[in-house]
Length: 306
Image 1: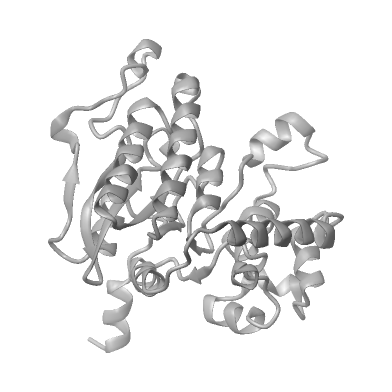
Image 2: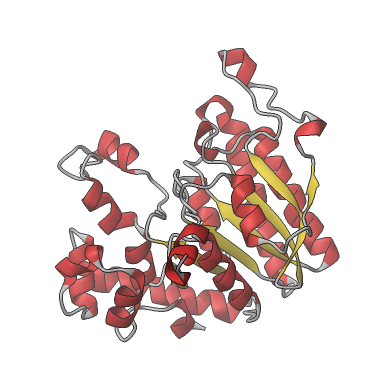
């Protein structure tokens, strides 16, 4: 068998993998210790009221492990269970993990794959989002990093999109989508003329990994491959950016400038053109290497504000 064929066989799609498969591929072999796993039976107390099935880990896997020899706390959302949505137990597990990371002075890696808050547990889910954000800020204020990895089926929407924005660094692949409001939510509230949720190409041009990377909403763009995510996460953990007032002020100034520069754009391709991408229409069809080479000189970067 040729080396090329062997390499192809070993490639595992991050998008297609489950939460547990992603963790297994990301973390150092044999290093993961799960907290509150399925055997603990910590299920949602609310779903049965709506006749909905529960899951013994409530759609999120948390624990402690090593990543490239580096001690980390890790969480992975299962997008196949209720779209990875936040409920009371789901959110509490992530809050507890982040607080444990702070107590141990360790970095955290969050494998985000979520549609936002569960409608069936809306109040508890919204509260959990607030507590998670506070826990991330507290952890970062202590000098630790919170790395978000996004490339799953559900994307990263709703409160998950806000959580992603609070991370120290974000690693995305092309299938990854990041937004506070999802396509259907925008269409429902603003009409199909404002946002056609059925136009998948438009959705990816607006919320997809390439667009988020080009506009500085993500820091690293990788192949849809568990090996690529692991390599990027290890490299990202090697650098630290303390959370200070000056960092926040610089980021706010960058966002205001971005709104002024691109506020009138009606499509991601118009933003790419304004950035200086030579042939914006070709961006969706580019493979990762071609995309990174073609855009490295024009993309916005959050590092410019740091």
